[in-house]
Amino acid sequence: MENGAHSPVVGSGDVNFDRETDVVVVGSGAAGLSAALAALADGATVILLEKSATLGGTTRKSSAFAWYPNHFGLQVDGYVDEKDDALRYMARLSQPDAYDPAGPTLGLEPWRYELLDAFYENAAVAAEALHEADVESIHLTEMSDYFAELPENKTPRGRTLRPRTRDGEPGTGVEFVEQGAEAVAARGGEILTEHAVESVVTDDDGRVVGVLARTPQGLVAIGARGGVVFGSGGFAQNQHRLADHMAAPIIGTCAAIGNTGDFLDIAEALGAPLRNMTYPWMTLLPLEWALDHDPEVKSLFHPPGDSMLFVNGAGRRTMNEKGPYNEMAQMFQRWDPRGARYPELFQFMVWDQGTQDLHSNERPANPIRPTGHPAPHVVKGDTLDDLAAALTQRVAELADHVPGLYIEADFGANLKAAVERFNDGARQGRDLDFERGESAIEVFFNEMFTGGIRDERNPLMFPLRDEGPYYATIIVPAALDTKGGPPIDRDSRVLRADGTPIPGLFGAGNCVASPAGKAYWAAGGTVGPAVVFGYLAGRTAAAAVPAQPGAAA
Image (cartoon, rainbow, N blue to C red):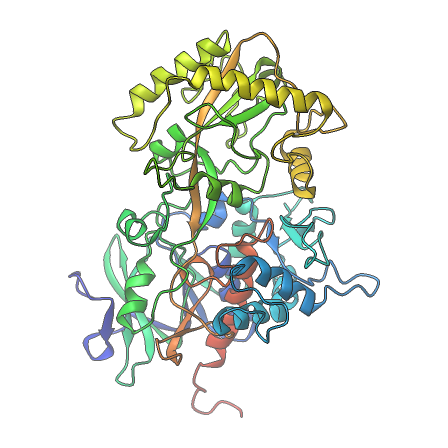
């Protein structure tokens, strides 16, 4: 195949395939591995293409928790995570401005409701398919959903699975990806890294019949008799797309470096609209980590420390520091119409020596590093006034490179007032302003990520010491990845603007429009749907493989 640049869609008359298979899968994260395993289980041959040299994309970097309603681990002693209840919980959060519990689609747009329905109907079988393929998991029976207290949530805990190592220990995305890739190879699938898909190939009827992939050796053309499944991730590493589509600023991302939204150009060229493009899966990062663009950066899911609080550039506390990360990050994006700025976009995480001693460690996502270890993102002061001065200097050093970063002249006085109010509540065992420590997921995450309980009345709060030293770092909203793209139907077929499927084209995961909307239902709310719709895409593509001449009916 020649090496010149190509448009996102190329006619088959201009291509000679270097090789062919039944199903081509693009991407080796949760969606792609699930699709490949499903297609192989249904008898199709599969070639899986990964853009990078390393398998797994963002899934590999993640914890790879996976959230499934009514999965096999829940179905014990006759228990059923009822469909109507699960759909109400998902819908209540996915499109809260339209949610109507009495409506036929619960008030949702029909496409979104249809996908939520398909997710529930297929979650258990897709999760079981991974289990049967020896992709091992642990059932987190006590892990609560992020909104366990909502009346719509009748199964508030136990929907999440996490990877398990071959030794039976809790694992991460590394185990998920490595076990999934082993399972694909063991079942005859072929995995090719450093194959960046640039174009799809269509026949005279408009059916997708293959791809063009850029490799270190040049361009290769691979035919797909049943179709092509994209599980290639979002566009969080594409600054132009982010500028075009994000409704509010994000600073930094934990997405794999290859997540540049390549599939969006292909989908648009084939007549597919783009939906859900303004909402990323959100999280938190220290500012300096976000600016470093480290491809291995990890999400700050749960800020550690009980004697710790956030204040904004005015030195005022504005939020519960232990809430679900997706919702916390959205609170950073509040717009002030009088000041014409985002006053909460940069938060200053402040902690004392007690938290430094109790909660410092070398976990990749923990900003509280052990004393003596490199921590260039942290400033220190012997008093709160000294800390305010150090932060003012840090802001001055960064301001030219970080639009909107600010610290006000009275920050130090307001910080001392915020600490005093926080301490008043901590001594009473309750948050006087933001209900910190009163939701099930906050308590669960605190036990999982931090431990070191000093006050059983409220394990998430403890007074800051009256004497220093004190520490601080700047925290910003970031994206785990985006979750917008072309729409799919309940069989994971990519749809045109008129709602008809594009023959031979399938999608799953963060490269397609997520029915979650702006919501993040629980830990694993990204990976669970990616697995389920990947499973459906693989099965649908396998079923589309033409019968071979002479094959038994």
